Amino acid sequence: MDRQPRVAILWHGDRETRNNATGENHRLNKVFEEFKKHGVIAEPAVYNDAFVEEVRHQLNEVDGVLVWVNPIQDGMNRTILDDMLRDVASRGVFVSTHPDVILKLGTKEVVFQTREMEWGGDVHLYKTVEELQKHLPARLATGESRVLKQNRGNGGNGVWRVELVEGTHGDDAVVRVLHALRNSTEKQMPISEFMNQYEMYFKGSGQLIDQPFHSPVPDGMVRCYMSHDKVVGFGHQYVTALLRSELGSEPLEPQPRIYHPDTKPEFQTLKAKMETEWIAQLQRVLYIDTNALPVIWDADFLYGPKTETGEDTYVLCEVNVSSVYPFPESALPRLVETALDCIRHHRLT
Image 1 (cartoon, one colour):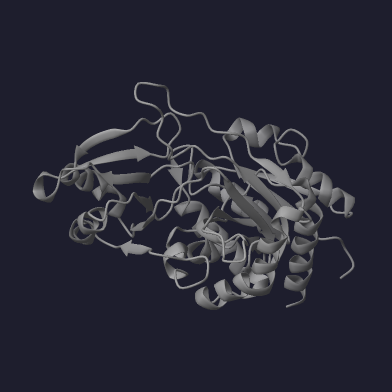
Image 2: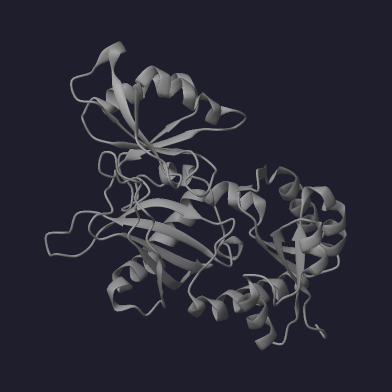
């Protein structure tokens, strides 16, 4: 291997963005800088369905492409993009994250599939609206809040906190519902109306995850960042998305996420669990080889009850794969080194 690999960084944009894109004028500029430190000049590859063939031609000329595109981006899904990425991958280009790995790892279903792991719990999967209608009322009748999540989405879209209004039951049951989208306010409606509204999330291959609501108060949420099977940093945030505001007041404002390197003392128990147990268990459950894991991905955890000896426990909320950004700057060297190792290995096979 005599030459340095050619690497593309792909994100979503319009024609003007593509024409003017550089490694300096985008939020991923530090990724470009880190590749340069490693002697590799990465090139921008702005994508849009409108010029998919142009991007396909570009990617067929590189050795690897790293992709940052959300499941739903500017009102569009990834169907055409993912088909194109599969095609270029079949021609020998290294793609991270490969669309087939996203379908295994980057959907809410992973919370259900790993429910027997230490980070799991009382998690259920609904594949049809009929299953939702049959089982949700009984689960709400226990009096606890549940969280419903569409299988693929981002930004809180399709994530709802639901609980039964006290004193209502049966066909006349009323629920309090709060959408995780920013600036959403709590509503009350008949449970039958709510479930009928949720039918839209079952279109195509859609399905829903149902898990208990775990309050982020007072400890917040921890986001653990990985490159392949190694922890590369953490984020901590006091999330407000599914917290109720006082009656008549404005929705609670989201709090900033604070980023930390993987050496942060408070999170060493979580790091050890991830690297020595949980990632390997996850790979076995989902049948994912280490080299197929994303070069950057993350898992969100809320705190569970402390152990008898006072140690923290963690409950998995979701795994993010498609467009992980921002992330701790401490993750950059490992991200780029992992990508270059994969690309070089790919070129030798």
